Amino acid sequence: MRRARLLTPDGPVEGRYEDGYVETEAGTYEVGRDGRLLPPCDPSALYCVGRNFAETLEQMEYDRPEEPDFFIKPPTSLSAHGQPIPYPEFTDELTYAGELVAVIDDRCRDLEPDEVPEIVRGYTIMNDVDALDQQGRTARKAFDGSAPLGPWLETDLDPRNLDMHTEIDGETHQEATTELMLFDPYEIVAYLSRRFTFRPGDAVAFGSPANPGLIEPGNRIEITYEGVGTLANEVVDASSKQKS
Image (tube, rainbow, N blue to C red):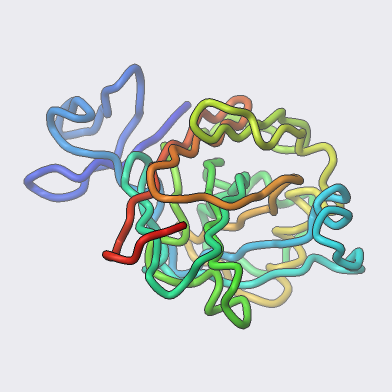
């Protein structure tokens, strides 16, 4: 089942998503006419794992991690499916990366991998936008608009063997399967749960396959994960600075 959040003139609503409609206890809403999609969760934090695909390590010349390598994006980094990605004026190297994301359903801590499916609300997609020329992961990855998330939440999914691809202006730039992860989603959530208390709505991103790359104003990025859907956003120029 797919669940979505919609911003209406009367405020956010949440319910079952099907064929462009969100069904709630209060009624049925048409996406676009009655409101726009919101990120499908409202996390206190977005925990992001990097360096989780062997081909990405080779491409970026990173060492293979012995444990999941992670960082945190704040809630203010989130934006929704269909919302523009502002190209920040402080960078000349903005990149994309298509990632699968688990959304936590219960307050929990100290999980074992086989317990993870019971506390996951569902799965969605993130574009890990990165200002690559900035110093340190927080400066690079935690700014406003750096985490487009959506379009909805798929609640019935095994995340361990899903095909994915990313297209920029209709051209395929990433193509892989989650089976190639160095640490699978259940291992990652369990690992993080030994360090952090998860709250309902918190999100965990599992890293990007090879070929994350540069984007420019005007680019349309479409990230597709099998069984979930497609997250689509367009990059816009957020300043008067001209890109060469």
